[in-house]
Image (tube, rainbow over all chains, first blue to last red; front, side, top):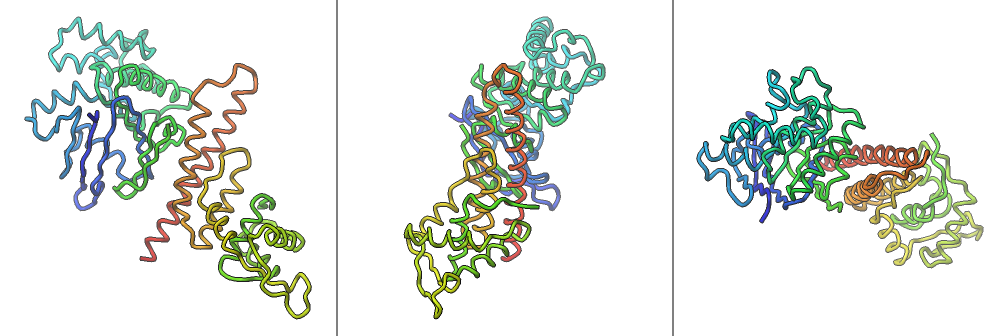
Amino acid sequence: MSALDLRQIKYAYRRNLALGGVSLSVQPGEVVAITGASGCGKTTLLHCAAGILQPQSGTVSVGGQDLSLLSEKDRSKYRRSLIGVVLQFGQLVPDLSLADNVALPLLLDGHERNAARAAALEWLDKVGVADEADAVPAELSAGQTQRAAAARALVTGPAVVLADEPTGSLDSRAGQELLDVLLKATRDRGAALVMVTHDNVLAAVADREIRLRDGVIQHEVTLS
Amino acid sequence: MCIVVGMATAELVLGLLADGPAHGYDVKRGHDTWFPDSRPLAFGQVYTTLARLARDGLAEVVDKGSEGGPERTVYAITGKGRQHLTDWLTDPVQPAWGSADEMLRKLVAAVRTGSDATGFLAKQRASHLRRIRELTANPADDDPTSPLVRDYLVAHLDADLRWLDNALERLTEQKESRR
């Protein structure tokens, strides 16, 4: 069963068609890079997969479950537990400490506060920023906040991690370190990793590259 | 700007014969039109390349001209030569030091002869990504220069990839504007 299955996803911003019917299946443990020039629809596709945008037609299935068949409440819960999202600039809650940011998805899912904090600290340790657990994002470097964002995406044990230009705001060394963290964490768990990137060196770590142009798949190559 | 002539000259000459028989002067002029910013192809190299292609059965003499000198000899591509050209235009270049020149040659020849240039670019792109993947899969050897060499290779492959992406975009736009 596919970890993530997108079928004929269409999305338009007013009259501008961003996705013209994109289908994509990602297997458990697979790393997929979505590439293409600016405006090709790659971020829109990731946001549709993540539930940040609702496609105007087509289906998103995670672990075999078509999300459109669930109630809004169940869909949110399903997404929170099965999909982890890392955005380009982290998008952490500015007033919360790193530990509270990472614990947040667990608290929203009803986990007990101490257990959520313990899990958050464990993940902050795995991504190498445990010493900064009580700092707020503004006190940290871009690399440190991106690591915390990765920890927040991984803490629920998702089946799919979606990353939008995860290293885009980092220099090459910090970017490589974050990438190593994401690859290790997803491979260890057999989770799928889907990365949107314009960085060819980042795309080269993927098992498969999907290249978009004008909202459709231009070509697809297996790299592994 | 100067592109070193040498590698793949035989295949380029086959590409220049693909539209029809030509003598050495036409081949030289055609080459210099395809690569206007590169070093002109020397007559001596044209004639030795044509003679080698004929020896290998990839081209054949179809007319020796009234005076019979090498400059009036007309060559045509053979069936074997056309197959060799098609294979060359389709195969991606092994990504290695100095491979960019051959990629450019193939791309120009593919566009000029009406071969599947965008298909070639897609294959070349995949070949480059796989090479970067190989180079970055494991840490470089723990010596003073191995990381430098690897960084150099990856940076050049990355630059090639950006050029390949731009080329693919240009050719796709050209194709769309002709529709």
